[in-house]
Amino acid sequence: MRDNKLAIILPCYNEEEIINHSIEQLILLLNSMINDNLISKDSKIVFVDDGSKDKTKEIISNHCKNNNHIALIELSRNFGQQYAILAGLNSTDADMYVTMDSDLQDDCNMVIEMVKKYQQGYEIIYGCRKKRETDSFFKKTTAFLFYKFMNLININIRQNHSEFRLMSKTAVNMLKGYREKTIFLRGIVQNLGLKSTDVYYDGRERQAGKTKYSFFSLLELAWCAITSFSIFPLRLITFIGAMTSLLSGFVMIYAIVSYIKHYSIPGWTSMMITTAFFSGIIIMSLGIIGEYLGKVLIEVKDRPLYQIEKSTNL
Ligand code: UDP
Ligand code: MG
Image 1 (tube, rainbow, N blue to C red):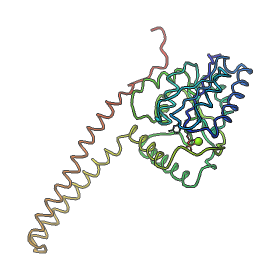
Image 2 (image 1 turned 120 degrees about the vertical axis):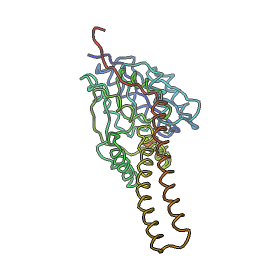
Image 3 (image 1 turned 45 degrees about the vertical axis):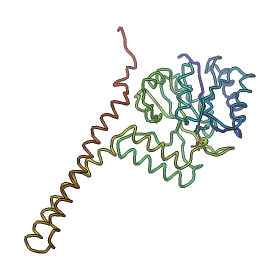
Image 4 (image 1 turned 180 degrees about the horizontal axis):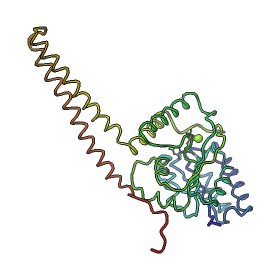
């Protein structure tokens, strides 16, 4: 049996309406798993308060006084869910880590399945929603388009998986090697390449409180995902530049023929030729600069070049 100290990491931002309910459910879950010897007695539920302005922090710290399975990390201001999760992972010592939202929209009983899979030797277990029934039509459509676009540019993101997953200590240690500042956790975790599997559950509606993600913050997250994992938008400029240059060749020929055949008014030919020629050159040059910028981006991110999972007799 593998070492089994569990830490459940939950980012929370202004969750006073729901946090008590979540804490009660999680304590029940933790106790039942300890009783079944699935996890060790020193396992923890770690809340990361992401600069809440309401009573979230006070409610959690009251629970901390009565129950030492509950821990609280307080961030100095609102940094965003991705960074709150990272803060939790980096500050907690455990053998396996589950990250999930503090509104418990994900079925927390799946943690039991995840821990069992961990014991079967998996390093990362992704929680995936079976259907997106609880989402609005708009959210479903935008999510669908996002996954399609990501696939199109060769970034494989697990469908219907957000931040609900179990990671082993090995996986979290590898994750710590990623030193980039704009973080899209889902993408990076899939980049680690460890032995992984999925568990499926029914997503629920939020029981209380409101979503903290507006359309624009979701858009920001999607943009972060694209720009952290692909230089496709930059490469697109090079492509458009090359196409414009090709097209400008035809435009130039047309302009010269028009000039010879006296179809054009004076000045038109020279204007067309210079505009077409320089449009192509300018867009191409932007593309070439983009290519180098893309390289700089990759260098600056300083991602690990490889991940060694195990070595023997070294
Ligand atoms: N959250 C956070 N910081 C933020 C925004 C959200 O820690 O700036 C937390 C939030 O408290 C919740 C989780 O991230 O536990 C997911 O947020 P939410 O439920 O609002 O997103 P949705 O489920 O609607 O996508
Ligand atoms: Mg939610």
